[in-house]
Image (cartoon, rainbow, N blue to C red; front, side, top):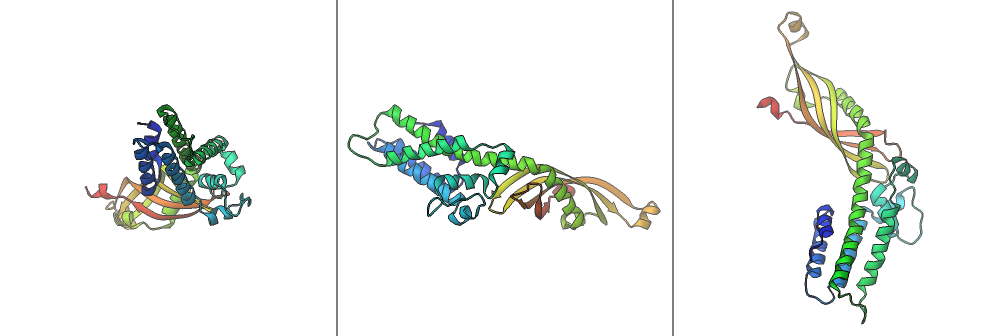
Length: 271
C-alpha cells in the first residue's frame, strides 16, 4: 500500500528514532495484520509525541513569554507553537506573516483520529483498504504539514535577517584577525562580504541561532608601505567562501548578539 505522503514524511522527519517509528508504522500498514490500521495509528501517535517533546521540552515551553498554564504540563498545541516560534511573541510572528492556525487545526483533528484508532473494540476494526489508505494519508499529511510549518517559519526568519547578518559578519571580519586569510599575505584587507545563505538552526526561548555562508572579498597586500612607495610591493584582489555561526534576539530580529566560529576556505589559493 504505497502512500506518497509517508515517503515525503520520511524525508522530513528530524532524527533516526523518528524514522524507526515511521518505518515500523509503514511496515505494519503494508502487512496482512487485521488490525494494521490501529497499530499504525499507535506508531504515528508515538512519532508525533516524540517530535513534540524533542522540539518543545516542558521547561522551554513554560519559559516562553506567550505561555499560559492550562494544564500541569504544556498542551500539545503549546508544544507545536513552541516548535514553530520558540520564544518569539505572537505579535512578531503575525508581523512576519505566518498563520499556523490551519496547521494547528489539522494537527488537532489528526491526533483526535489517531487517539480514536488506537483503541480497538469489537465492531470498530478498520479493515477496508481504501479507508485505511485515506486514514494513513491524512495522519501522515498532518505531521508533514506541522514539520513544513516549522521549516517555513525558519525560512521567513532567515530571509528577514540576511541584510543584518551581512553587516554584522562584515564587522566581525574587520574586528577579528582571521588566521586562514591573514597568513596569505603581509597584510590582508577585508573589502566586503556577501552572505549567500542564512539558515536558522534553532529558535529558542531567548535567542535564535543561525548559520551563514557566503563570500569574503579581500585585498592581499605584499610588502611594507615603503616597499609600495618604491614600487616593490603588490596587491592582489581575491575572494574566498566562508561560514559562521550567529546568535540573535527573539524579540528584535535586527539584533545579532554574537558572531562566532568564523571559518574561511582558502583551499583555492593553494591549488
